[in-house]
Image (tube, helix red, strand yellow):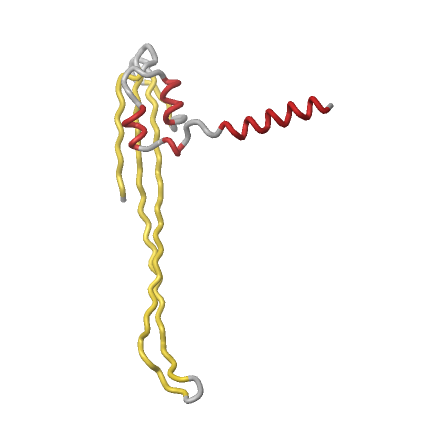
Length: 133
């Protein structure tokens, strides 16, 4: 029983240490430029960028992988200011009216990567496009 518990603990801990492979964290313009090249296999692409969002085929039945990532960045700012003295109280002093302005802006960025494979399942072409709005 103790041996079984030790094996279970080792398996559990080794799974935690492995860390994720691929995924959205790897889908960046820099990783596409550095890690994707003509002739690499689909397994190498998946290791470098993670799983694609869409897998389709072209007119020759060769696979095309499409990665699509959208990220949103939200910025919040707060401004406080005095607008003037309203009245004077002898006990506490002047009462000042203050204003508070909250400003919230957001922007979105998209990254689309298209990878085309040849009849030998090797990368024959790839392209990417980024936009911000």
